[in-house]
Amino acid sequence: MLMLPELMVIATAFAVLLLDVLVPEKRRVVLAPIALAGLALAFFALLATPQDGELLGGRFALDVVTWWFKLLFLLAGFITVLISLDLLDGRVRVRARGIGFRGEYYTILLFTISGMLYLISARDLITLYVSLELCTMPLFLLAAWRRDDLKSGEAGLKYVIYGAFASAFLLYGLSFVYGLTGEMRLDALARQLQGGAPPLLWLAAALIVAGAGFKVTMVPFHMWAADVYEGAPIPVTAYLSVASKAAGLALMFQMFYRVFGPWLHEWSDLIAVFAAVTMTLGNVVAIVQNNIKRFMAFSAISQAGYTILGFLGPLDTGIPAMIFYLLVYIVTNLAVFACIVWYSNETGREQIQDYRGLAQTNPVIALMMMLGLFSLAGIPPLSGFVGKFFLFSVCAGAGYHWLVAVAAINSTVSLYYYLRVVRQMYIEPPEENAPRLTASPTLATTMAALTVGVVLLGIVPVFYETIHGQTITWLAALAQ
Image (cartoon, rainbow, N blue to C red; front, side, top):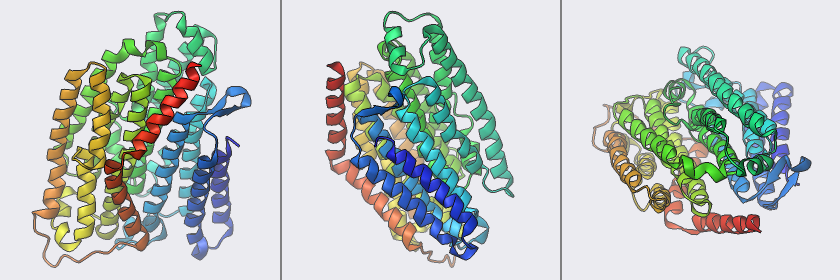
């Protein structure tokens, strides 16, 4: 059944919510294993699902690209649950760092994952918009999860306000598209637009870009990111940094490739400018950040600039490069955030200078964090380098050599500010009598597995080759 993964995630969400009411407080530790089991079952159900088919009269469909996006959504959700365990179950050295309400937390997280799964399978405008709201609104609650924390409340409020504006822009753009064509189905919209693009289509596309740019943290729609990332609980910040970006890219793929595909080449120059400005602003502003979460927020903004380079190339190269880089980014960014979550759990500190001497007190975790940061910077042979290589190749193949130069310079700049954290860990001395901190077995295993993934994705080419081969086969089938 094509919708089985979505139904499994939703059923798990309701099961967790019901058990949270029925199970005594001391036994609610079972909620996390149930959430993990539900996501794992959905993952394996997706692996067994055919990569082609449709339901509900074509309003819900599955193809190769949809399949890969769903795989990434489930992976990001599974890892987020793992790195949230200590905070939710109270296994933290600094008790004030716990966030509690584990049943509600897992339920909301599962609902937002289900929204993302439906988003990429949607094939009409109404389903697309409703799915986007289903995956966005729960994030407002997660950002403001610490009710007694002023920063968390501020984060939730700002996220709601910016999110409402972005949703309004998107809905207005979609209404223009419907008004110009009289169609709701994405394939019917694409056929209508093949005969010619009305002038108002440019306005509709601009409004849709504003709505999607909010999710992707693309400049100038990025202004919410730093404050929300800083105020939200760290596992939520980690999830926002990858899942929100993945949902935004899914929305852009749905509209740009499935609807505006014939006209995408006319907007390439504008996409290139957005990419250049986004990666440049993110990298430059990240240099002066001192809070580790704001630092990672501007890092995420710069990574968005690299990711949208995939829209500049043809389908057979742009789509695989973009999906592979998104996979790399999810694994790498969550590896870094897992280390940040661990350190915050143990110390309650969130400043970059607080990491000084970490290599002397906890050398293994310092090494894991360094590898993650170097991968984000694009240092070979780590996965970040390989992902950027494919995106830069797409960009160069489309004739945007100036943009490749800008991206290469920005990668060099990013190495400087990532080295700020590495310098604190490896060169600065630790505080006097600094304790040797330990991680829980679950969090330690998660960090180790993610670090292995950061390395393997860079040296084992089978992942990109699989995505590329499946994409070419899918495009050939469409052409027939």
